[in-house]
Length: 268
Image 1 (spheres, rainbow, N blue to C red):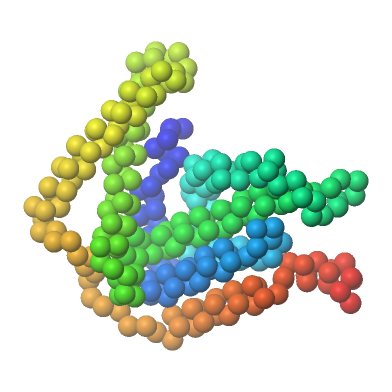
Image 2: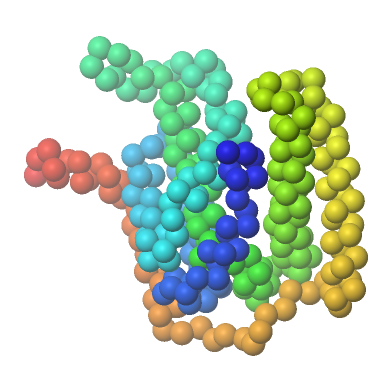
């Protein structure tokens, strides 16, 4: 299983063309509810973990109703996971303040903040991927532009997403060629990685230039266009209002702790 298969960015476009109740929602309400979700999740203190858990309901609901296979998003989370762990990997060494006692062990703030970073990473990245899978990058950029996002931002976002295909495709071909030349002698050696990365950059830039020339030949003028305009329906507004109300409640009340107290009888 190579890098190209792990990233599998082309699969997101296929998922964005599915027909489901979530896919039929207006792109603007999905973008606004996702922005509200991200802002709410990131507003919690650095040691908070349990209060974040109920927020998993949002991406899970979108995936279930939209028919998005969890395995597709899980592979992409694994690709990005090392970057998230790099952010907080030294927290247990730098923050040794005792914040809780678990039996005979003392839990330091560093481990708790590392767990909080991991939970926020899973929530935010899975939700962003689910939004793209339930909308499609083209409709999403058009919706952001209708919400007032600068045109230069939406164009850059869509082109960045499209050029991921270029880089991943070139990288997969180069890796396959290197593995064939190695005649089964195992993974790539460290001394060959540097030249491969340099060649990948040059090949991707050359391919991107040809893609841009092809876009210009087809009349691209720097604008995101969609077929027809859509009006907000009652179901769209109910979706947005319902999820924002849930985020507000989950931000003000620790639902997980309350359920735990109710189940164990400590809250009665």
